[in-house]
Length: 296
Image (tube, rainbow, N blue to C red; front, top):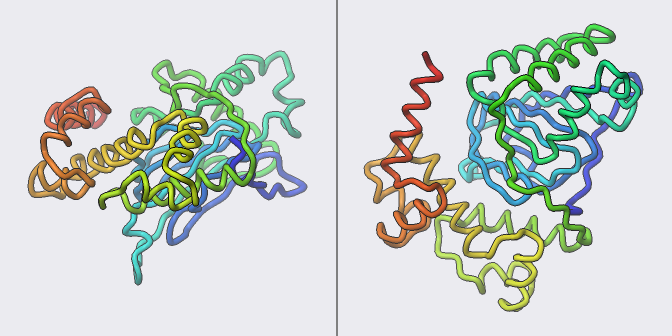
């Protein structure tokens, strides 16, 4: 998907780019770039859209995004509120395996790591058990220079390539080439839905955002996202409901349902199970069991 091709500034004396972000919110546009991106969320909450899939993010999550993988870290709506004093913090490492680093990756000894990088075009989230090791290694890279930084970088790839339980961010990595204009349209639709998911949104509302008829919009959206409009909207709402449930800041499940954009508990429960494979209570039990295991 040709979506806001973004150029990462590369210093003349660097092949590994380290970026420390301290901002009111994350870059708010769907985009892609030639570099692989490893992002450690140090502060901030929201939704990561990678290709056509959504994932909640919280502090201490680490995500790998493949080269040219369309993505956006969408901060929660509260970060855009007037007079919001919230901020995000992230440590980001960019590298282009086909740029100056290609000579390194073409060494025979680097073949396993080169294969690993090539196999991760769909991106992945670092397993929570491995987050301390990976974040510590990212800090070593950020705090070093020259040959030492390069050695820390190779060690980072070695650590990542050794984890057997990596799940891709996107189920498929189907490359759909569209014009910049259509890519910006898709970004605008994502932005509109993710800012207004808690309110009633009709097909006509979404189509009007990109000045299309509902029929043309349905064909356009399905072609370029592999989602129907309703399925995408439901995934956004369930993703937000999952964050509310696991944060624990709610009165009851009905409150979560209504504040996530659903107009009935029955519909919420049905859609929740169709998206997650679990009922809300089963999802919560599974989540907290996982938290207990990772905390041991």
